Image 1 (spheres, rainbow, N blue to C red):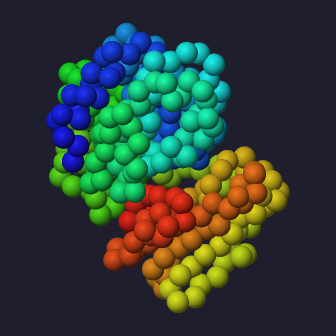
Image 2: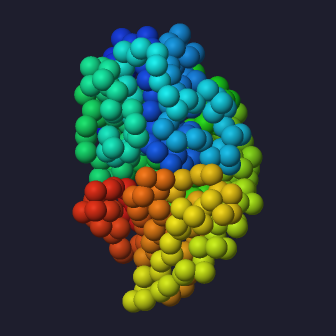
Length: 296
């Protein structure tokens, strides 16, 4: 768990800024989107003027999240603080670390991945947290900010989606209590679960259908591939595996699932999932990536 000294330092960084740049990881998931928008809305309530940014477009399934329309992919305005959200490595922040101004501003690193490199000026990293959104909530409560319904919806989206509806092994009493506080603040759990977990574009279903033709399983490892041409053929405009790895690990005769995705620049990104007792984070770290023990 992050120390109170780190919370104090994080609070001081935020209070000393005026135009913070908030950045989440590429191929944003619900936790990245919820943490980004939730913190952004809260900082606006404090009178700050945050810039919300992500190198990749926000997936359509998260367009219900408040303030998602204000997330930009390019940044030209000056900023005096960088807040990295849900990213274990600066490379996961996309194009932004290449900006000349990026290295001149202090960096607050808010994350929960076991493989986090602690690359911030201040690192608010808790490997046992359910999500980055849970850590953002702790920070806002430490600051003494009142959580409204919009901020609560953003943060509960992060918790719900990263725990797959409170089904992962890191769901504790503290996580449930955090969710309860957000619901009391006005977030609707049924609404978030329906939109964040149960709904997906038809293009995702078509992508899964096409990718499943490449399905293979051997020695309790199940895998499939998604070439760039396949994504284009079905009209899928997003990045990543569109949640396919999480679907594959539901197979009874598999302990590990992998989906190989060809990126626009020709690189191959690999999404990994595992059942309890296995550690795919270690594999991802050796290959230059990162993540959680069961999802990397």
